[in-house]
Structure formats: C-alpha cells, structure tokens
Length: 299
Image 1 (cartoon, rainbow, N blue to C red):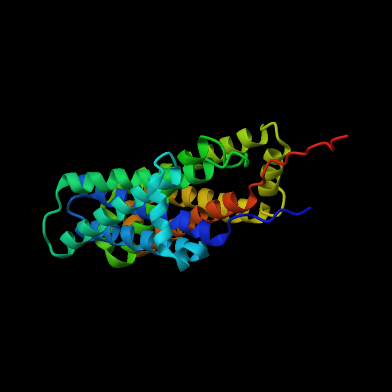
Image 2: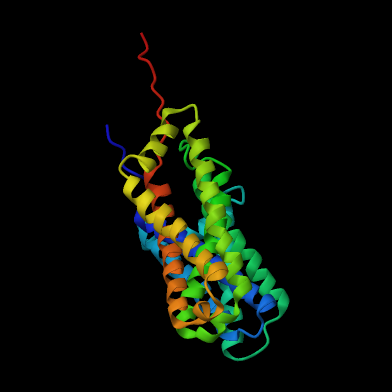
C-alpha cells in the first residue's frame, strides 16, 4: 500500500515563505540596531517581509480549495483559541499589518518607532515558530510530532530571511553589503546550528516506537528523498554556504572579501541557503509517514 501525502508543494512554499518573511523582518531590525547606517539593506528587509508572507497566504488559500471559494470560512479560524492554527492566523495578521505599516513609514521617510519594529520582530519570530507547530500538532506523524521541529523551522526561517536580504543587497546595495560584517558573521552560524538540529530530529524520529518514524527517516536519507536530502539540502543548503562564508569571513583577504568577486561568492552562499530552506520544508512535508494502527478481526 502506498501513502499519498496530505500536503504537497504548495504548503511547503507557504511554510517557506512565511518563515522567510519573519526572518527578513528580524534581519531588518537587526540591521537597524547593529548597522543603522545601512538604510537600503534595512529597507530591503522591510520590503521582502510582508511581500513574501502575503504571497504565501495566497498560496494557502489556493490550496484550501473550499476556503478559496468561500473566504468567510477563514473567519471561523478565529473562534477556537485552543487551536495552533487560530494562533497562527493571529500572528500572521498582526505581523502583516505591522510589517506594512513599517514599510509605508520607511518609504515615506518617516521615523519608525522602535516599539513597532520590536513588535514586528516578535510577531515574525512567532510566525516562524508557528510554521513548525502547525505540523507538530499532527500526533500521528512521528517526523512532525517533536518539539525539535518548531526550533528547526525558527532557525531556518531566520537563516533564509537573512540570506534573502543579503542576496538582494549584493545587487541593490553592494556598498552596504560590505559593511554588515556582524550580520554576516551571525548568519554564518545558523546553517551550522541547523545541521545539528536536523541530525537530532532524525535521531529522535528514528527512535520512535512506531515503524513510521524509522521509515520516514529512511525515506529521507536513503530512500526516495535521498538525492534531495544529501545534494540539495545538506551539500547545497548547509555545507556549501558554511564553507564559502568561512572562507570569505576568516580566510580571504579584506580586498577579496569586499571585491565584486567576493560578493558573488557570498551571493552563491545565500542562494544555497534559500534552496536548502525550501527543500527542507518540502521534504519534511512530503516524507512524513503516519502511524498505522492494525485492528485484529473480532471473532
């Protein structure tokens, strides 16, 4: 018997874009407090944040065919505050409103209150965690039902958000890109942490009493998803960015690091992080197998 996943690529895109948007806003706030002179990079983060989250929400509505035909049904999600999905709607709604207000103020060249940026950052982090909790409440899927998944998605969201801002910044604000050394050093460690979390997630899932746990892990590391896991996620999404950024930040000369060649190397690293971030969510959504319960025939 073959198992058809309950969610597919559209939901993976939604989870990826929602997390990336939250991470991009966090990046913009980081730049505000650590690199306040890099206003163009800050604006890039403020543009990316609401844009990608809104696109992700549109994909979610498209995937939920019934809800797309009857949008008022989404209002019912606000009636059950014991549901993770209800809290996710609240976090997303507040985040999008705050991010849009911040963007409008920025474009109008008006001062953005610190409390508004901090509120947006908190909501962005909440959205990133929610994307992992949304899967985690499905207790019948060992790969999803673990406390490590929200933490993994949070780290990945911040990493992809920073990568998106830096990647656009290479082309839109190359001079400021060279100035945000602290941001790039902080970003360097995120794929390393992510690799540790993924290894822990696979170990915990494989130890699940149900065979579904081990089968999900096997599908990732040596089954149908092995090529994506090792090549696109581990090599391109984690190892390559770590090696390239280690070279650029600590080994290469300052002249090479700030040259156009060095910027293109960093851009390649950031592109790899984005690819790995999406592939991670696609694999987590698609490779998870449910626990099956066999009932003996009543005699």
